[in-house]
Structure formats: structure tokens, C-alpha cells
Length: 176
Image (cartoon, rainbow, N blue to C red; front, top):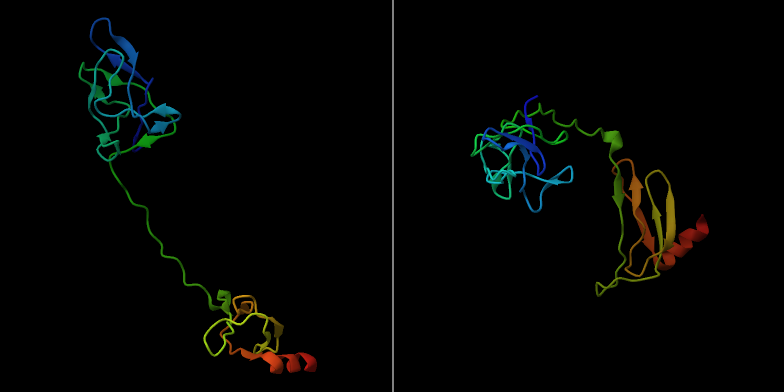
């Protein structure tokens, strides 16, 4: 294993001072929790009053303080002896191999377009009849929405779309 279990409040430390023995970490982060328990950091104390002072993580800071892990030492010479079974903290970084994504195949590309019908003043025109025909002969008819837009027309390749609006569109509707 490349890291060590993170230390938390209630995880035991073993203190060599007479009468101290095994006692829990008593203080920790007010807002970072591992497995529902406050994360222990450098300067947090065990129940015997010994602050954690050494062998802390060099790569993980919690509230600006290095994270404590199994093996972190206290001022009394005590050591953290157990920690989280789900949070492992290491002091080195080994990046994974990077494989760039493959180019998207052209068959997967979708082209789409939407028209907006506007008046000579540039304002959108609602409820204008339209007739749109793509290169394959597919026809789309309807009325522009309140913003002057037609539905989006999707094709599998780049195509020229033919659009007719107004009375001419209604005439094409009648031809179909």
C-alpha cells in the first residue's frame, strides 16, 4: 500500500508515558470528516494532552494543517495506531498513464440548424408558416414560435437546407 490510513478523532494512540497507555485522539477538524469522524491534523491532541507533532502527511492539508495518519507521532512520543479503513493518505504522487481520446468518427457527428424568422426591422416574427426541405427530400413544416424560431433540423452530414416562409410556404404545403 502506498499510503497510510487517515487518523480521526477517537482513533487510538499509544503513549509511552507512565499511566497514559492507549488513549484516543481528542480534537480534530471542525469541518472535515472521514467516516463521520473529525479528521485529525498536526497540533490536534490525544486524550493524554499530547499534540500530534510529527510524521504527518506532506501532501494533504486539512484546514491549513498537515493531515495525521497511522504512525503520526505526538509530543509525548506516542503514535497513532489505527485509522480510517476507507481514507488512505500518501506522500507521493504517481500519475496514471494518459491515453488521449480517439477522434470521433465522422458517422457519429450530427449537424443541426435552426432558423429564426425576423421582419425588416430585425424583430422576430411569431406564427409565420415555414417549409424546410433537406437534401434527402425530408420536409419540415409548421409555424415559427413566439421568438420567430423553427425547430432544430438535424442531419447526419453537412447539408444545404432550403427554407420558404409566408404565403410561399403555405403554397408548398399544398403541393405535398
